[in-house]
Image (cartoon, rainbow, N blue to C red; front, side, top):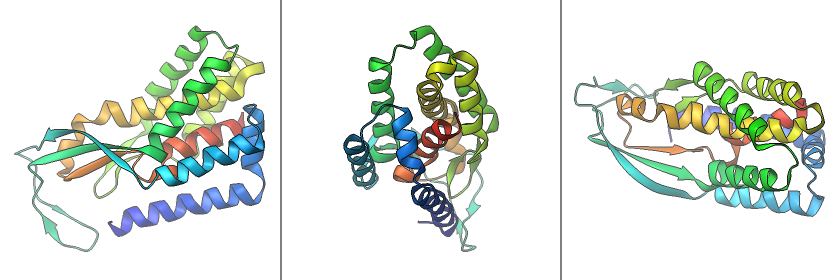
Length: 212
């Protein structure tokens, strides 16, 4: 794993540990109506799932892409194809939990759809491709926007809207809408939610609920 990606993961782990130390995770899950037992189960599944990448499909490489230099200063030729995978803990679990919240929440589907659409556009506008890492988004900017959108649309159910809007918005806007651009990175493999449970999708959902 490239040093830059390790540094990013380490920074996100520190953020999560700080959140845990403050008891903020329990506050976030309580806002979402999750019992301590179910919250613990969700975290455990996320952590274990972060070890699993499920390959989905492959994208043909960009033949015109120039060689790139990794963090160690070594030059690499772009890969002929890029395998796109999905991380269980960093993507599948947050999306499944969003579906769970949607099914149990009294929030009208139209409001949920609008929150997701807003966050999709916002996430796309602030995300960027970083060689050796993939798609990155600002750690705090997107959660703040998701919390604001949730409060604006439905103050009583702002936590649910913030989580679903933030989670799906990052997935669609920052990851799925930039899939074709990944060809230009020349990476042999990319993973949606690739840093596992500490990826932007997971962190965005939790921080958005805390801020909401």
